[in-house]
Length: 146
Image (cartoon, rainbow, N blue to C red):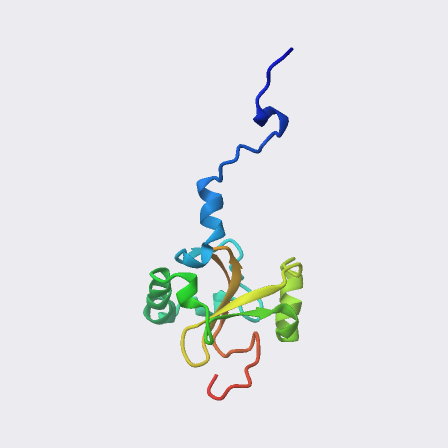
């Protein structure tokens, strides 16, 4: 009679949870990290409008650095929140389709000021930067001063 282990009976199941799997279970406690692969340079909310201006380095960059020191649990709330794609402006929905990103359910909005937003896709603890929205046009707000 041939002996074999339980792991051989159930391939891929060792009874242990990997370190990365444990981290992903609690991503709310992880600090935000940035990813730029989806950064839209063109279009109505493209980052190219900042080219040649110091607004990025003087105003935006310091705020992005501050977010890196925060966990998602500290970030998510009233001013920084997820937005369902069907709540986005028609212009934003069209741009998602043009970028082949129309298969996502929601985007995440980080408020930098009264109206200024950075919109991206939240993927566990990563924030995939997508758009610069200085005039709060990606998703219209019904709140005063936003």
